[in-house]
Length: 192
Image (cartoon, rainbow, N blue to C red; front, side, top):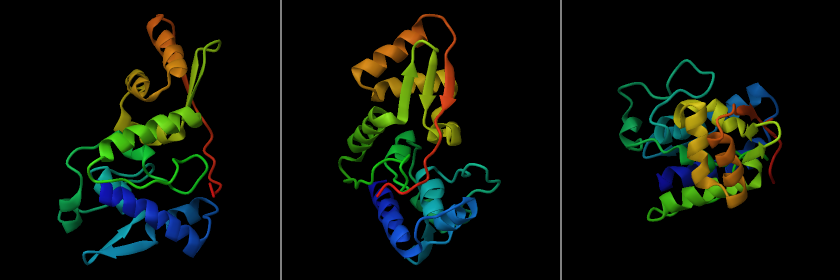
């Protein structure tokens, strides 16, 4: 897992240098699929690493096909179990994504937990107690299949919040009233 998280983050840096900042939707699609490295004789794009290897060959949002066919040899390298924390360890070079970081093989789980805490602390989740609303990153909406249903997502997030946000969210979840979830706008501008 650490190898492919690190490869992805290094490739993003290289892709930004080589291709520049992707402008619109079509540019972003090319950025994530056309820029590739050859590793072990196989081509890997940012999309194939994220969705094929780290997400267990799951379709990316708004796609009808999986990254790898059933006979693709790259599937042998896919992680054994999906860990939704990968979304907070991958930097796509935008202001709304996680900070770029690199991981150690021995500490990857703890490092991913730290990355998630940092992400939620720095605006990836906000609570408006008065409006009974939780504002979440669009990453959770796009990859909701990796996180679970609304209430499950909020309970999962509790593990990665500071005491203040955790207390506010716990209050909303436990007082019996409705909880509204809104998704923040995603800022595609470069974070560097």
